Image 1 (cartoon, rainbow, N blue to C red):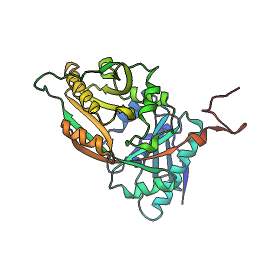
Image 2: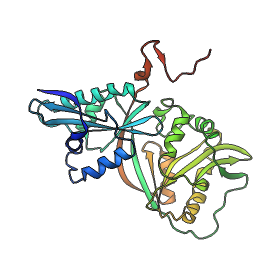
Image 3: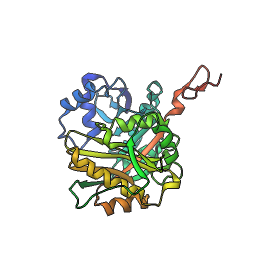
Image 4: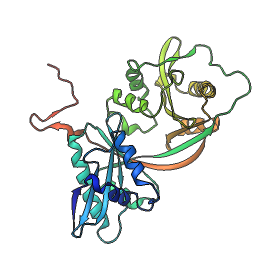
Length: 313
């Protein structure tokens, strides 16, 4: 028999090793220090199933992220009753999110993690997408790279981005089930938190003087950039705009001393995947994204009111 317990700080390392399983080579102390310093390892982050003799036999880790999200990691079920133990841990972890400022719980799994996927699904997470990570070395290209006439880029502001993003989400083929699960201002905050934002790489796409989309890239400390998002409004799709914009942005990466760019794309988004391959991106990893909305946990018990809805009074 085992009971579900909130892991105390003095047992963080033990619980993390349970979560990481075969990845025990990870240095625990620096990882714990890094998460704690960043404010991402808070009270309630680690839950575990504890046996009567005090051993952890299953555990979960929740790391709060920007944009009202939380990332979840779960130990792999082992032995008789392993799946049930993991389900109990994960359900307890999700229930504890009632006190967290998050709207969306998410996890990235290897396609081979079928047992873990089954636990998440049993705990009301649903499979969002198969995500393909694609990378490319940034190199100088012959000839000038310019935008077609009528098309321009300008520095994007966080004030205008939510309205632009909302229009680019209409009939999107990239993880459409995410639409409406978070406020768009929180999505912008999440994109910003992905790395350093350089104005030249954080751009609104303008066509004939009107905003029609955006391209958002962030940089890290290892000369790597992430394509956080590129999207167009429906009336501007199918015109070669995304390809033209990305070619200009790739040239800008060189001036920012970026040598590698990566992205993640929904495997069912054929137009985007085709464009990335034409530009030279190669698939390097496959992950399964599972999500669960936690907004139902944020309802105030006293008034049964969704705390996210603005009062109309």
